[in-house]
Amino acid sequence: MPKESANRLVNYLEKQAGPYFRGAIHYSEDEYYILYLRDDVDSLYSNEKMEELVQYYREENQYHSSEEPFELGNNHCTVNFYDGAILFHFTQGDRLGTVITLEPEAGRDIVGFITECLKQLHYNSPQEIPEAPTWLSE
Image (cartoon, rainbow, N blue to C red):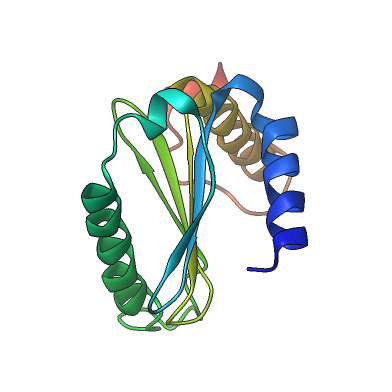
């Protein structure tokens, strides 16, 4: 990833996530770049552990770049919620990817966004959500 692109991405993430931004790593088939790691997050990972994590995402990227079993096109991003972080894995073809992590507290905005989208779909469009959950009407 060119340095200018990496700087723009990190600046954007710092602006959007503020103190919830934990880190961003970009990888290719044979190397990886730490775009940003907050100091407390950096101290959690040895070089060996970071290599192991990057290899895991390389392998996951191969799996997610396939259109199977769905015929929906490419899977551009997976989101995982863990106790200690929200992790976004953006696949960029079958050999490149970017992993971004945020603090779990940032998830409140994500859940709020999803909830608002569901409300819009349920109440203000011809699309209905069958058996809408009770929290949707709150």
